Length: 100
Image (cartoon, rainbow, N blue to C red; front, side):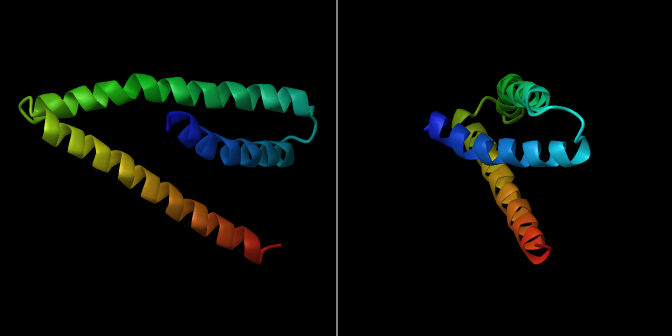
């Protein structure tokens, strides 16, 4: 599940970042831009792996060591992030569709 979710999340993000970077800096080569973007995406992935357990542990501690409730709260935070991402992506898609 993690591999499929990662592929669904990072593949569209990578292509969008590549297009935006080419538009902002047409002087750099595609290899240079790809290297920078790859580093940013890898950093985001590992930053999430660092911050996720810290937030989960904090929620677990705040809820007086109640594992079921803390898991539910953390899952709801992840679901809210996904819904927000879908909403922003839909608005971006509609905006770009009108301006083509």
